[in-house]
Image 1: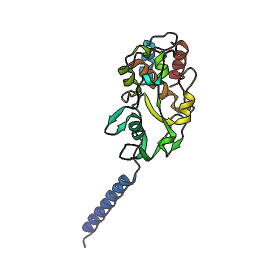
Image 2 (image 1 turned 180 degrees about the vertical axis):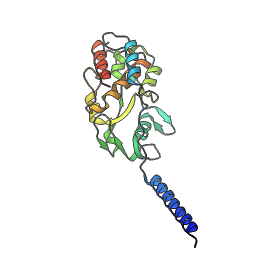
Image 3 (image 1 turned 180 degrees about the horizontal axis):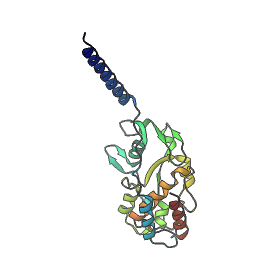
Image 4 (image 1 turned 90 degrees about the vertical axis):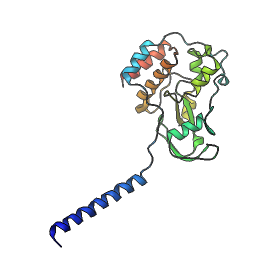
Length: 216
């Protein structure tokens, strides 16, 4: 067989092997984890923060979580919590009721990974009670429902349940994620949500946000 033909055959074999290798890689690679919407840049967050109304935090008088109807139906049988669990997890399998039966979730707040949906809370980046004290007390129920189920802004994220419970309704003056690598993302998200929803900040909160943003 002429040398040229042997060389051409070898090239064809190598090309086929490369194609199979790439195809195999694509078939076996784990699905990339989705995430909450990416917050605005630190520079934009600084601009937004400067535009927010600064005033003393209001009271929680009259506040109830029931005034923020949450985990409403988003599509089919899936409510907001289930939608976020599917979005934030890897290889999430759900049953006919949209409940997650398996999957893997990485909690950005503390760096823990979980395989049971029951180990996760869906955190409201700006807590409902914090929103109430910052202006949501004057909203309509429809506005509060939209805020509590906001999938468009970086307001909802699946995280370790006891870390979310430790956060409670605190603002960044008294609580930031224990995983320091996520703090810049966290404060950018916080400012974006407050800016979009025209919520106020108190002076200590603003100082903490400025300090964190300067470190981004």
